[in-house]
Length: 98
Image 1 (cartoon, one colour):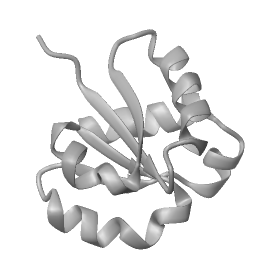
Image 2 (cartoon, helix red, strand yellow):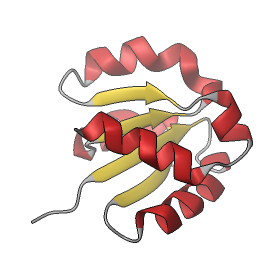
Image 3 (cartoon, helix red, strand yellow):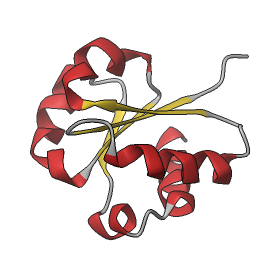
């Protein structure tokens, strides 16, 4: 069975890479988690089971949800993002996959 995929998108894909590392630790390898620049969303978004947007691109949430109506799209809460709370962000993403 193919692993579920959680994709994070932010301005450049750099700031979310630390968060991804912490999320991967929390996931114990149970899902694929990747970060990309938001410019890749049209190319990569369709592969994801959950799309998480960094707070700095929150304004794109509605547009992304329209582009991918069958995929749960959510904005990472600013507090969780700023604290790099990978466990919390991962748990929130799991809830979206249910």
